[in-house]
Length: 330
Image (cartoon, rainbow, N blue to C red):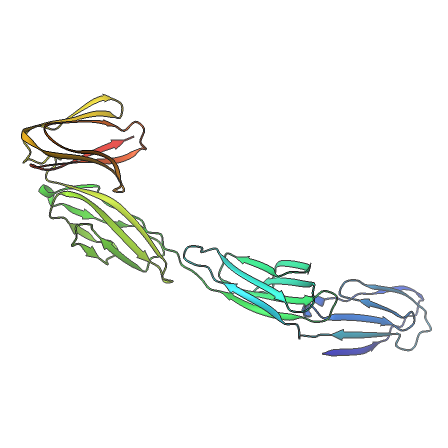
């Protein structure tokens, strides 16, 4: 659309004067605001500069013409990428003018506050977005009166953080009950697997009782309102009694300290039997497999000096039963 009007300036004192356009930001980005001086034949773009001129006190007719041109016909190709569960700050908007270019890109937030400006660009422009919300874009061809105004909505993504604590060792002789303390964030659902093949729960903070000794992995799977998932797991050792040794095994399990974080694990059996020894960390990951042998005398050299600080579990399986030894590396 085009708008044109005469502008008359008069003065009682001849001299030099200046015409300046104010509040031009209220116009679309590609609007042309031209002032034509019929006396000098000069046209001035008032969006980018003011116009200075000499005026006499005898002027009585309109000397200037103000022309405003707004052409919203510019087409823009755009793509929008919403954040994902794996890239929660990965929102992106890409826009490209469809004219010959170059283009000016003016990015704003939903309140019209400037975010980014790219001038005289011959390629597409990209706005990387880390927050959900509404974003505005004005595009015009540099040096032309065309323009395009677009609006984009970046959707919110909720990423859960699964986190909980519980006892790391419980005893059948004391009930073998595990109390869960759930510290997860942004979770709308909780799914628990207690690692014994039977126990599950959807409670926020369940209480679970184990029926057999062993090393179990408690797995928590949380889901957010936008279907993002996070997991956390912890190891729980269930022992027969507070001593931590299986009473069905003949002989005393001896732990000899050689030096800091270095031990010899020994036990005498009543007869030769198949014995396997494995070391796990607190996440349930196998750290060392000491093998399986037929023997009457268990003798294992354990060196934790090169391993990280934390809790380790040595699991000893024999024909006589299973034993779990808890070790703490400072």
